[in-house]
Structure formats: C-alpha cells, structure tokens
Length: 157
Image (cartoon, rainbow, N blue to C red; front, side):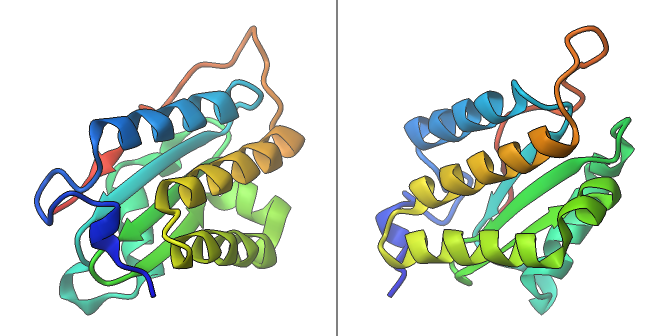
C-alpha cells in the first residue's frame, strides 16, 4: 500500500526533499531539451473541496496559465500525497495528438511505481514518457523555442 510518509518529509510546505525536487527538475529539463512542449509538476498534501484529481489538476493548469503556451502543448503532472491521488493534464494540442489512452497509461505507470514506494522514480518515468510524446509531435526548434514555463516544482499546501 502507498505510504506517502516514506517519500514526503512532512505534511507542510516541504512535501519533497531538496534532492527529490532537484531530481524532478532535472527530469523536466532533460525531457524539454527535445521539444517545444512544457512539463510542470504540482505536489500537495490533499485535494481541496473533495474534487477529484483530474478536476484539481485542470484547475491548477489554468490557474497557472499553462494554457498560454504558444503551441498549447503544456502538461501538468499532479500528485495529492495524503489522498493518494494523481492525474496528468495535457493542453489541447498535445491531448489531440496522444489521446485519453496515453494519459491513462501514464497514470497507471506512475501508480505502479507508487505502489512499490518508488514515488520520485514514478514521476520521473512519466516525465520522460511525456517528453518523448511531446518530442514526437512538437520537436525542439533551436531558433524559435524558449522555455515558456518554469521548470521548478510547484508545491501546494
């Protein structure tokens, strides 16, 4: 069974260790080297207002203006630690390219890692898979590409 306390140090603002955050940022940067797409990670203790994970991920996606990327190809990986919930939300253009089944497979991949207490590894694996999908549909252009969204891990409450 997933025990979030094995990974996350407390139920405060420090849900991930500095090393965990660095590993995730490095995975995002590596994935984005080959694509114009943007990947962000949001981790919080629990889902407010008893939303489901996808509703919460969608809310965070739009609140952080991830839908304003030039190619509409941003992706948010969302994890609610105590609720043991996760979701992935992809913007319009990447969603149209990969479809619902791709997102479902990635959530299943991450869930499998989480069940084995490999939390950061699960997020890194999904970031890598999303990066490959983005590369296939939105390859990197060294002339026009810019990092439109911060690679830093977003932390909730």
